[in-house]
Amino acid sequence: MPQGSLRELYIDELRDLYSAETQLVKALPKMAKAASHSQLRQAFEEHLRETSEQVSRLEQIFEMLDEKPSGKKCLGMEGLVKEGAETMREKYADEVMDAAVIGAAQRVEHYEIGAYGTVREFARLLGEDDHVSLLEQTLREEKQADEKLTQLAQEINPQAEAGSDETSEDEIERPQSTRKNSRRAA
Figure (cartoon, helix red, strand yellow):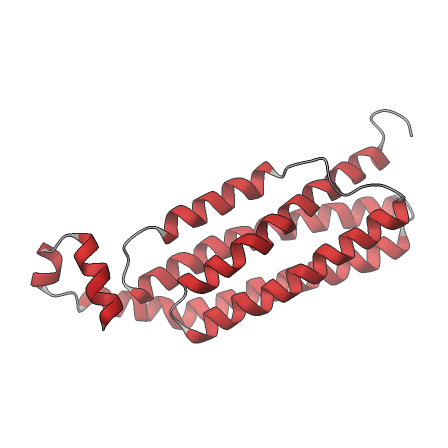
């Protein structure tokens, strides 16, 4: 394979996606655990199953290419996962935490939509029609996950805003760690 070829870039981008997806397989259960809204938790659990299938599709593509999927770390996804973890350490009320986790998850979905769109076009240019269909399937799933998160945000974000109005004077004066404990006990 010529150095600096589109095929080489394609394989490199696929490795990046493989790393991104394997990072998400570890992050999604934590996001589900942080979610208090049952439909949001269910959406994360469902997307975890889809993500595992997406990893398998990428492995299938690597098999067809006679290449290994490992060897690259997706720094973009690493940053998004770290930001999400940082968000989950905040001491937000349940509804506000749900809104924050949706925001973190949508940033991940948008990153993936861009990445899968790019590699799908590379596969098309390279004549890898079998790869194109596998990548399109994943791209559809990522877009559907983003749409589901948007729908949940339309329900949850107003609840987060309404919950903010109900914060008592007493709660405002208490340290955040105490607020979190009282919120969990409720």
